[in-house]
Image (cartoon, rainbow, N blue to C red):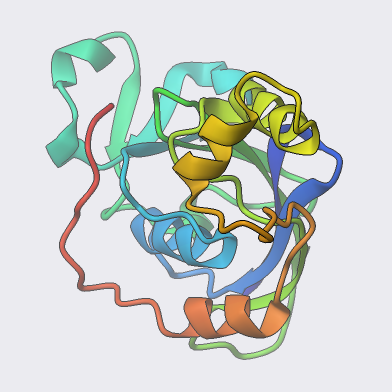
Length: 201
């Protein structure tokens, strides 16, 4: 029985950025991490963690190889490669938080919408909305600042942000863009054997 999740980045509203995913229940949280990265369009360039909403219960699911375990001496750290989704997700409506890039602190609210009866061997993306924010733009606050700057040619950082994003003269950053076809292809072709390439920052 696969799980149907809606995953939405916190504090981004206009437009909201979310994806609806169908995931086999026996997938690990590490596989879940890679699928989320693919569905949103993140670059998997930073560390990540899963935790209950607002980190209640001091439970953290992450890649143990990347963490200083002394930092988690008062928390329960579980290796994301050794725990399956079915060990955490039990009831529809249950929420969890996925945080990507512990510096920019991109928090994604995970909601278990349905536990379906269909057979599923691979993950899939069912729907979504909103473009993935650029990596390293300063989290949700920095992203809103970037949007304001790009919308105003007179903004003091307008040209700097355009240059940083690599935008050409008549090119704009599309905050609304979402291609279901591209997201599905990315999710369906995730390489679960890839080497970790993110940094603990």
